Image (spheres, rainbow, N blue to C red):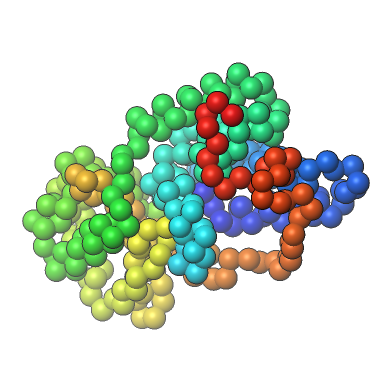
Length: 296
């Protein structure tokens, strides 16, 4: 919902603190209480984040998160966590994004979403439908994980060799390159559009690839590359691709985002344990693992 693991952790911490101060005897469904509180706080944070990103220097990309050490996140939430999708989700307003994520990523029913967002059932259905239409117009069908990894590795290999022709063969005509650096010197401050320009950008500075150490990583359920120079991580790179080829190349130079990716995620240790009411199959707990039908 936020595109930032750091912001998400802040929300989790705030919800946990509120939970500790809540009279448990007055809570009918702990999971419903936590989901509602979490969503509403995330919407508030998303609204302020939109304002902050308006002053961001250059393209803003969602913060990459490691999914190699968490099979559940990597497998079950991979599609919802893909950087390309998170970037498209930024075009939705916070309420639309919340409704869409709850429905598509976590399989909440429309009545549950209506209760969380404190909206009518009819309004929620319209919001989710509108979000789907907006995203379907923006989003391309992704290749599978193996093909994505192959395309990324081929792109990096061609870029290292300065092979512009091979790069162009990988890219679709309207490919775009986005560099997230927030004003870092030498980083493109506008999107680079077009197959030829994207290929030329990847090879324009031969010294960029000279002497670097490339390490494969799993980020947001997809393959990525972390680029090290003199032992220090400087750049995260991944791509978005369809059957037609690579349509988006995403570079993260922002040091804080790279540090957040590499450092342990949790900045506070809390043992949640088994939340009362969070039993599988308990409707009041909203503990769904499969998508509910649209009529639900």
